[in-house]
Image (tube, rainbow, N blue to C red; front, side, top):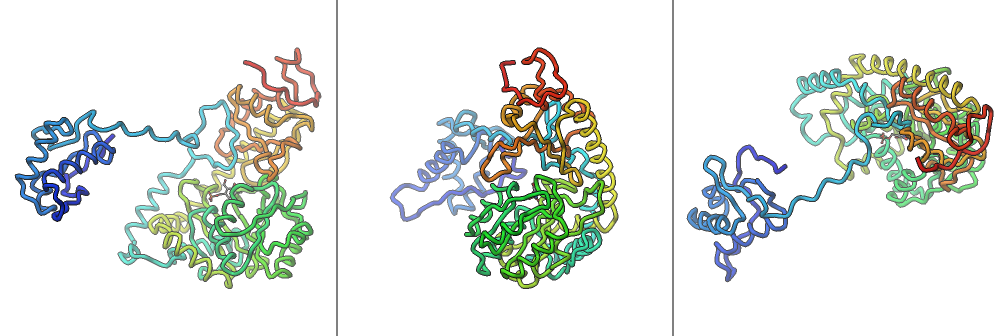
Length: 493
Ligand SMILES: Cc1ncc(COP(=O)(O)O)c(C=O)c1O
């Protein structure tokens, strides 16, 4: 659809060259024609009234009217009383179709989509958010509309620092808190700041988020190296052998294995950072949702001078808000703030003030309580469905967040299983994409249950239970309880 400017303005980018040999009218006609042919002006778009365009270009109105008349005669324009002069249908190439959305909007059309990383989008507290935006706008001093502190709104920094101290036992100081657009930007800022302070190599957990860490590191001019993760979390001895002076970790709930970084490892990691004069970048991505353990505090609380801690509302509210915050070691704040300043001058202020109101008012906590219960119910449904339909499959990583790791029989073919499940309208995702090597062994699934309802969880697992245990009745002639053979390769369905 072409834009319907409410009041056709005299703004039309036409350059009239008075020193040129080409007559003025011809220049105007040619440039409007070109704008239409190249799609700069689209079908139905209204051209400025001749009087306004003439005034803006310093031409006589009669000359502009003559040029419009010529273009009308050539079929580029149409004129209707009361509707002005517009680009004629068929005068310009149709606009190229928009690219397909890279991710499905809202709930997936699948029977069940166990896509990881997405919270319940339908449960976003929209009326609370609208209330918070209105409240924030109402009380907002005009000065807030100016370029502000690149660290972000002082109000939100105060609120999130208090929240981090209260909920995450972090040693948060608003002076060293920087508001950013989610974890993704927080990571880029941290790595950019580290590069400015002389760090050359950053390590990251493997499995983890190799693609995004490697891309952010490359953009900052850093080399990225993987470090293995075991049942206690990141392997600190292996980390020490990499020669890196920075590491990106997910201590509260390792992504994607779900392992919690053990107390000894935490101390070892801090000791490593001190020994190499390095920094730990903590991704505190889903700490709000813990189920069956004592709360695990942020690593930053143990060593505020060695840990950059990054939080996001992508899991607690919605990814589309693009709001997060970074707790900086004081020695790194300046560098990080200057990267932020270069990047975008600061995050959008109205959203920041709205989030501050939401958190201060208790509505954010209320939403978290509601979601904790909802995710706990889905988690229980997932375990019950797996126990019933795929009893051989072990599940780990369920202490927090809204994803679990399903350990498939060792001989299972992760990719074939994902394909076979898709043919049954169930979205499954293998752990191979979380490994630097992309290895499909050992075969694991990362089952996200954030944006899939309880009933869909049950129905989805029921639909693929035989695939998970390698008991596909269509291929084996009937269920064979306890069979631990490989997941069948997908056949024609
Ligand atoms: C490990 C991890 N950390 C953090 C995030 C959140 O990133 P952002 O805040 O940029 O949306 C994600 C998103 O899926 C993630 O997988």
